[in-house]
Length: 535
Image 1 (cartoon, one colour):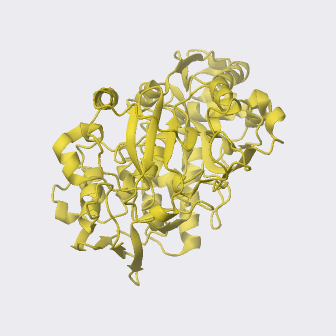
Image 2 (cartoon, one colour):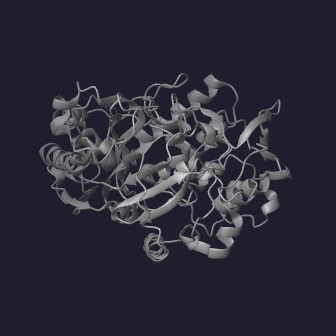
């Protein structure tokens, strides 16, 4: 498994390599400058950890399908067509005849076999390996229960035909194929350079753009891939992604014309919401994303569900969205966002201070007495800090528990979750595809790398597995609701707070091709300029 430290070292090596190979100059002027949020942890499809990583990775690497820019549905990508068996368990994909790597090498079905097997190889340590568990044998291979790659249902029938066998009918599988983790990487380059393969000059890319350089704390620059199958419809030549974590810095760069787009939902401070919400260049939409906090169920007192529930019942969600976020977010006691056609979440824990105090007393902590020292960890951002202060106040007022607060940088925040080195920790999740399973099965099953709570519940796991084996939409939804009730009401290893709204800045008189959608997907290949930069 590649550690965060190793990844950061690799990024620094990338910068040094490109610097000494003369890639930081050249005088190119970008056609578009995007403020992308925090510095990515990795842009290797197998190692991405979040949205900032995925946006860049999906620009330079592609999978069998890609996201439609208008509604984020799956549309043909490197595969131009496919057949699905009558039982919906076998997909046969046909790779485009004109699909090429950026260096001109042909893209084949073998590239998908290699790239997907790399994701589920336990030594890779991919946090998103679970995205491939729907494939026969993938979960057992990733967990080390099988070491035979032939046990995994991924086959290249020939250079241009890929056969994928699923465990069960999976209605969202084509959407999963568009996710960055399922994008393909160049086998010869990865095998030659190992963990530093992206450092190699002109590393072959499979997407609409290829990497020019990654200059830490400055920008990631990409250039149009002229060998991309849809290059004729890719207008922008050079695009820069700026890593900016401070909302004030992002807005200053945008207002002075140093950037064209802000599309990170965390970079619009709540203090200015009233001032900007009616501007023609300010855009908002509901997102398939939730804000919640995790409980470390391996530490006292949160190994007791009564304590977890007491803390959740002491939270006034309405106060948080009205006093702090103020962007139209919807308070939610459930984790799966609204808007799915065939699913409505059950309610979770409600604001009930008296009930919370009774549960805490039953757990052995009447009026908060005798409770161990507790700390709430959050990312160092202005709004996250304000939410943390509000939660601290609620827990003190309603439970008489004094919770310490700890703000940390994004990379540290991720490490603490992964290592279960926290008591309570701020979290969020953007759905990877339009199905409740992206919040339920992919996140909180016992073996999910993204669980990060220490919570294991065989009944919950069984409901998810049973639901995902069914083709009947209503029966499946009922089982998923039962699982979500265990998660947010009965056991409460997490406490949802609200459903996100998405916020972005871009001028529709200068830019087109960006559309609001619930998954917040805005493929760069679809963006057009109505006038050159500076005009």
